[in-house]
Length: 301
Image (tube, rainbow, N blue to C red; front, side, top):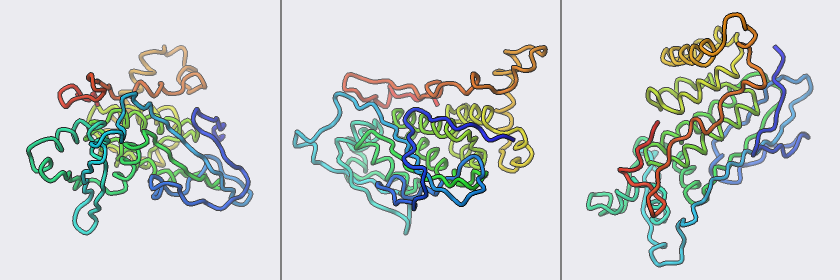
């Protein structure tokens, strides 16, 4: 199979193509991100390439600031459990402005409001680090390095698990803006690398429910980017629910739209790359304060 031709997606810039040493991440966001590998193998020695995906959010005009005394109030978020539990201190104004769930909890008469502490026992601390980075900057900024001497995609497993876990956490905290930035990140990586995240499908399906927008996105990416021989070689990675969803996708997106006589239309061409990322966005509803309430923020995911 010929390797897919590399294309530079919007927001993606290749910093260097000469041999360099992997550089440590500039922020905690990418601290656990492993080295990435490219689509096609190379006969020459390893060449490390820095690839920066800088996803910038759209800051709200009425976002929080420290001009008032209330901006200095802090709350505590506990992530993990037992010996792995970590404590994060965050400004209350930021937490409550972007998350209706945090706002309801910290301003209530319940234990969270009394102690100004919120527990996320089932969330790994590294995911909360990425969450807090987004709360303060409204940016999802990830740096990865690609090694151009492998044709496998195992190097992308951890970054994609991080992405889907962050999406699920944002779903729990009613942060549709963060969910949609994760969708953009996934779309950029898949387009740039010609990659279908098949090695992580079990984790993706464990973190999402039936009909989830994120599941639909992965189905679309798999249908458009996965080589046909992977249905055999990578079958062990495919959950049964995924195969059902994929069959439904093919029947609605391809078979129903093309006649049997036009068999060539079943081949993926440059004009048939997956839908725009916005097709998989979570709906954002806002009130006059610019932040959705628990009642208004019904997520369609």
